[in-house]
Every structure is written in C-alpha cells, then in structure tokens.
Length: 247
Length: 247
DNA sequence: CCAAAAGTGTTCCACTTACACCCATGA
DNA sequence: TCATGGGTGTAAGTGGAACACTTTTGG
Image (tube, rainbow over the protein chains, first blue to last red):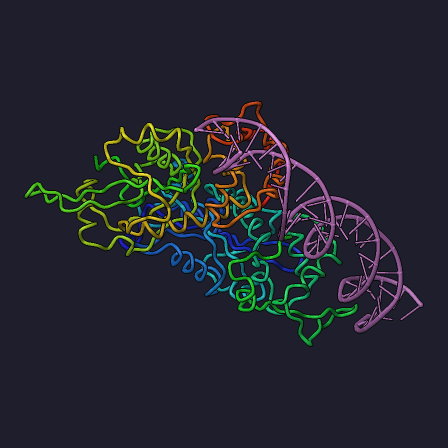
C-alpha cells in the first residue's frame, strides 16, 4: 500500500449538504484501537480525506475521496486553502494512528483543502454503504475533530459564504427542481442573515436562467410553490465574464 | 543541502510591481550549463520560487523566497492556487536542471503559488544585489517561461484582478503617499478598463480612510496633485466584516 | 373555516453613469 | 502664454431596502 501514496501531501474535503433547513457537513469516524488488547480505545470524527497517490493530481485525489465517501461523481469541488503548519498533526496518538492506518512514516503532511457541494437527496442513498461510517452533522453542532480539521471547516465555511455571495453555487446544494423559498432558506442559513422575501423573489426572478416549470410542489398542506430550475448553460452564455447577482 | 528540503513541494511567487504606468512582474534568470564543456547552453526566465524546507510552513517559504529575491520583508503575500499536474515538469532538460540545481531527485513537485504586491520604489534598490539576476518585466511582454510558469502567472493576474475589485490591495503597489490619479491608473492598468475620472475621485474621496495630506506632488510641469495616504487601521475599523467599495 | 406558506407592488433613497470646463503650475 | 494634467457638479437612471396584505391549498 505505502508505495502508491505520497506521504507528504493529503487532501481534505469539507462536504456540504443542505436539507432545506440546515447546512450539514459530512464527517467520518476514526476508530483508535489498542492492538494488543484488540479493544476500541476511542472513536472520533474527522473530515473525509486521504493522502494523495504518487503522481496524482490534487483535483483527482479530491474526486476520488468524494467518490469513496459518497459514491458521487462529477460533483462541485473547490480548492480553497492549504494547511501546512508543521504542528498541525502533533498529537503522538494521532501520528501513531496515521502510521498504522497508512503504513507510512509521517513527518510533515501538507493538506490541500477542498469544499464540495452535494445534493443531499442524491448523496443520502450512499451514506449507509460505507466501510467507514459517515454522518451528516449540522454545522452548528460540530464536535472537536482530530488534527486541525475544525480550523479547516471554519475556513471552508468562510470561503463558501464568499463564493455564495458572488457566484451561482447555491444550486449545487438543491435538487434540480426547487422552490424560490428553498433557495432563500439556503442563502439565509449559509450566510446567517435574514432576507426580505419580496426583494429576494424579485431579484431571483429577474435572472433569466432561473426558469419556472409547469410543475408545483407536492404533498404540502398549504398553497404549493412553483418549481424552478437553474439553467447553467444559459447562465454561462448570459454572464460571459460578468458578475452573478450578489446577495 | 538536500537533507533540508522537502522534494515534493515548492512555492512559486508572482511578484507584481507598478511603476505608475505599467504593471510589472519580477522574473529571474535560469542558466543551463553544459558542465563538461563549462559552457552556457541557454538562459531563460522563471518565476522566483523554491522547494520548501523540511517542516517549513508555506507562508514562511514564500516570505523567504521573497526576501531572497527582493530583500523585502513583511510584504503583501497571497496564496491563490496550487499546481499539481504530474506533467507540469516534463521536459528532460528541466528535470536534469532541477536535479543539478537542488541536488534532489525529483519525481512530482506540487507547487503552491502566491502572488505578492510590492512598492517598486522600495524594491528596486535590491534588484542589483542579487546573485540570481532578476528583472521587472512588463505584464504585456512576458516571454515563454519554464515549466508551467506562464499558466501560474496568468492565474495570478486573474486572482489579483478579483481581489483588486473587492479589497483595498491597490495601495500595496503604491508608495505611502500617492495621488488619486496614480491610483486610478493602477486600477485601469490592472483591470484593463477605462474609468471616468470624476466618478473615480468621488468614490475614492468618499472613503474616509483615504486621507489627504498638506503635501503636493513635486517636480511636475503642471498643477501639482494632492498626495493622499491609505489608513489601513481606519479601514479595518470602519469595515469590520464589511465590503470594500467595488470598482 | 382555519392554518400555513405562496405570491405580489410601491415608494424612497443611495449609488452609478454620463458628460465638459476652468484652474494651477512649470517651462 | 502655452501645454499639461488637476480638479470640479449636475441630472437621469438604476438598483436596493423597507414594508403588509391577499391567495391558494390541505386538513
């Protein structure tokens, strides 16, 4: 195993999902075992990640990790920072665990961090089929993770907010057909602000690449909302080199 | 020498400077020698960069390189991308040169790219004191460089433009005392657009952290312009968590 | 008919844009 | 006195922000 990995560089992915109400992050369990006693010492959480393979491109490594943990291909991935503090992995037990887990002697791992945006309805079927257990954890309820993963997550959220304000990435977190209210909730939850719903609708519906369907919401006990979809190609055509509307 | 470097990770710096008229980039010469004949085979240009040292943090490596090549400390540095294509260094002669130059066997170098903004009037005194020759090259006149350095430069320029539109980084390229016209030229040259000078002045002078001095321009054969300075602390105080004016 | 969320218009203000001339200085 | 760039004001249009009620549906 060790021969195929580059022991100096890893990638970590902050996988965001949105369940129409809350922003969630996919975290995976790490189990630390006492080998002699064959006994579980502790279980904690981390971001999905991996050392890169030898001669592997970073984007490839990120896609690979994402597929390993969610089963999804072709999802939105953005590299947003690099973490290189030599003390980022300092705990003796962590170094030991890495050694056992990878078969590699670790000295200083630089981690390139990505965030990705997935549609929860597509991702959830895969959640149970993992060897390593993964959980969707509410962004407001993140535990202490291993290494510097809390810091990575915090910075991912800042990067996501910045991108959400200027680029049409919110649609990556919603199913293809969505309501304006769902999109508004997404903006409100991620940015942590309240938006005036009349103004939000006006602004959104002015964008020609947000296209109403004949279809309506189903199974709600109130007036069903119109469903819309986001036409990315049209967006690209209209906005060649220009700005997204900003919130 | 080889023992102190990490052979997998390098940093490259795109150092921007502005001479009141043109945007320039600091490039350094690479000389390829035929060792047997002790003869210079060719000279070409590259971005200043270096392998990182073992257990060295990336920001530290970038500052180190910058100081090596410009003599400057504490200058504006921003990490903007990572280049990891395994074919980014593919030329046999380049691999050979790297080996001779670093004493290290190179397999796959991932390069973390920074751009930095320097005040030309402060940087120029150091230009001549370098062991490796460095040149300020006009952004419109960049030759073919080695490796993927042209691609790195192109992406740095895109990143700089994005940042210039939303953050007060232009001041890093000007001396402490500057005229509004100089700042406008900077925006025009970097963004590649024309700006209305009445509107530009109005917008700028509305910002309270751009402070007029009693002093005027000297030695010009026309009405001397008022000098201003940028009060970064005041900017931070005013704009806690908010937006810079956008151009 | 009640509860729940969808959907809709107008006014005010701030900001952007377009546009042309006089002023202060050094040579 | 001329050449050069500095410095200034106004009007029209655009976009954002604030604000409350009616409509449609399921239960």
